[in-house]
Figure 1 (spheres, rainbow, N blue to C red):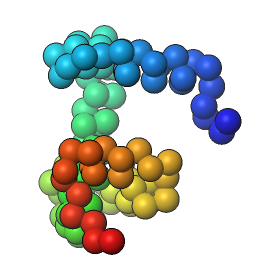
Figure 2 (spheres, rainbow, N blue to C red):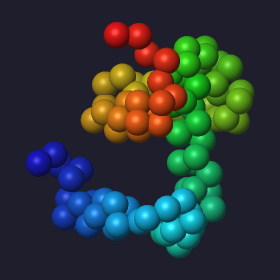
Figure 3 (cartoon, helix red, strand yellow):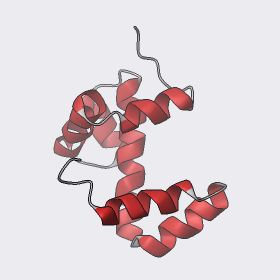
Figure 4 (tube, helix red, strand yellow):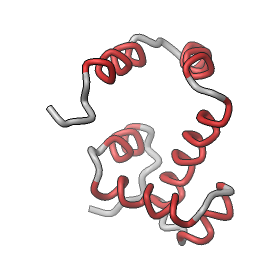
Length: 99
């Protein structure tokens, strides 16, 4: 198991998997995260979607009101991470990635 995959992280993942719908997810995330943390997570997810559509980094940064450093980090994890962004993009049918 990777260093970041602690028993606490696995327990958090189990809690997320137990959620049944958007309202439950929103309630859980609001209780677990500060408003700033929630905003940061939402901006990263939005950035991943835009990057996947081929939008240039600077435009993504302007759109999500973030730094190009954050956009670069999201792009790195989108391409070389654990596959989480890719999995959700593909499952939601938002990916425009070409085989």
